[in-house]
Amino acid sequence: MAKNETLHIRVNENVKSQAENTLSLLGVSISDAVNMLLHQVILVGGLPFNVRVPLAPDSLVVSSKEELYKKLDAGKKQIKEGKTVDVTATLAKLRDTYGY
Image 1: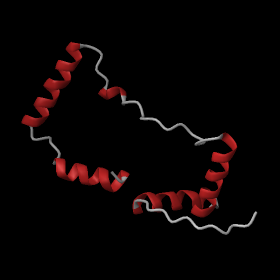
Image 2: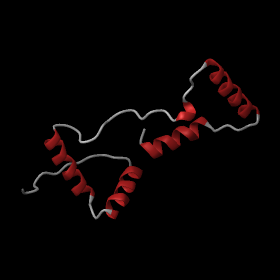
Image 3: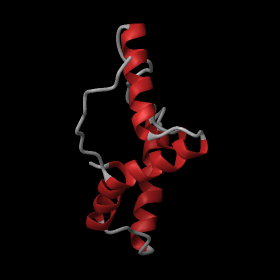
Image 4: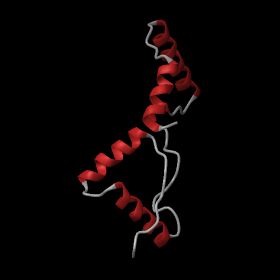
C-alpha cells in the first residue's frame, strides 16, 4: 500500500526523544510505529491498549482513619524538619516529564 499521506502532530520533546530511543532499540522509526498503531486501530476497532488512570501506589492508599492520622502526623513531622519540595519546581518537573 502506498504511503502518500502526511501527519503533522505536536508532542513533548522529552516524550519524542525517549520514544525514539526506545524504538531505535527495536529497529523501528516513529513513522513505522505510528503506521503500526493505525493498522492496529483498524484491526481491533479502537485503541489496541487500555487507556485508564493508573492505580495509586500502595504507599498512598489509606484503609483506615488511624492510618490516615498516622500519615498526616508523618507529613507534619517532615514539614517541621524542613523536608519539603517547592511546588513550582515540582509542577515544572511534571510538565517536563509528562507534558502536562
